[in-house]
Length: 289
Ligand SMILES: [Zn+2]
Ligand SMILES: [Zn+2]
Image (cartoon, rainbow, N blue to C red; front, top):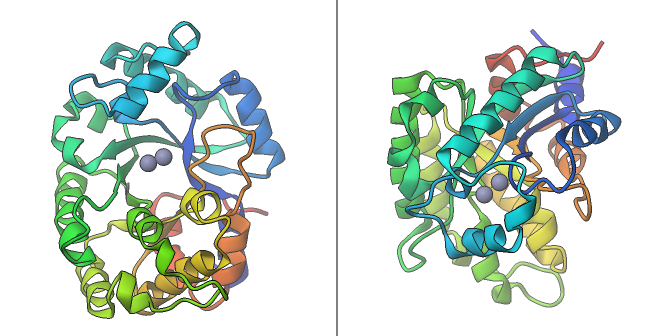
């Protein structure tokens, strides 16, 4: 049984959401060196499925790929994804500095389009989740996705399944309702307490982790201190209901990415340590000596 201090130390060294595929602007070896200097040890290395899968690729991805057409480290096709995994598997095998989790991030509507050969090698599936319909409750949006993820986890025995940045759309969409004095008008107005409770109780026993996403908190909400408070408030509400958390920066590059994870850990330590311990126990994370 790990002590709370040990769990905190592991979390300091853990980031389950790092993009090292098509969007990485520097060689992977240099990036790994950077992660090492940041004292990261347990790392989830992944990329977006949609970067490699043409039929339902979002226009933003197409625009990005067009702009960098001649400078892509992998082809934006499933063949390119195969090459990406070959590279990550190699890092996993050869690197003694890291405990690597081979991952994939996929948008919720595309989960059914992921070919079986991918499921066979990933240890980490992150569902890139955004509310699609803000006129219905948050719970009504989230719950069907958790159900799908839970089925996939069971069918393919994927060790870590995360709901990626599950708060993003609601927080961004409603940021006008944060008051100027930095006080939140109402958490209820944005998520609804009943909706929070519904999501929390549905998540229990599904073994789908709720990601604390660095990008949501520090990139999108950086000019809204009230937004940050709300971010923590929502997580606290879920934590008291026993929701299991995963932790990820959502870093796509070195520049401009402030690593917020230590801040999360400090903020939630020691009251909600338990909400991370299931994640850590799952797959023999490297424990600091
Ligand atoms: Zn995402
Ligand atoms: Zn991501």
